[in-house]
Image 1 (cartoon, rainbow, N blue to C red):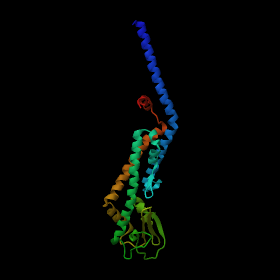
Image 2: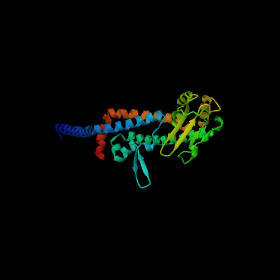
Image 3: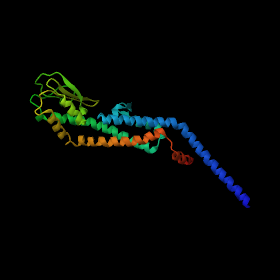
Image 4: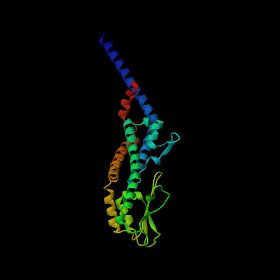
Length: 277
């Protein structure tokens, strides 16, 4: 074959390869552009979901399974479906980066379980306080309420027949500085009521003026000493900080994807990977 024909064939092959290369990339870019809005919305939905979970954990009111859509799978069983799980069920999770989808699914499950564990910790807090009889003056009692277990409602003595109290959430005990602030507001004519109600449990605690054997500050200190001896309570406190860090790391990645869901290299390698699917 002459030199000129070799040159023509090489030029032709090069043109065909470049044309094919351009065509494949063009198809992938066009598909990505068509999917861009949908994929951005999925990322935004996941980002907002984890921001909501982060705020609820920071406020010590973590969300759990029962905060999300309930799906009755049969006569006796109800399944709760949070945001990422719902995206997985309807197939939308397949549109996003697989590593982010996997991390989001795993983290959501851990956060839902963490919320459930925090609810259990409320029971630990109530039992720890109501069992510390030596800290209360004579006259404390368990009240009969609409609970299966009558010990779920505890009341100290009320020597001044006080009928005013500060309303607080039992989960405030997850934040020591908030508890110290609340107890500093207790006065001669104003007590404190802690309560918590969920679908599975209900707790109530009334602490009235002059009903403690120790000053309020000492009472708070001794209760926390008892609480941190409980591995479930102390473990959940440590887990809280770790989960806040995990959420922050994941949402940084998601935020980048919201701005640019398809990077150049994703498009480049994805275009040729599609040929073999």
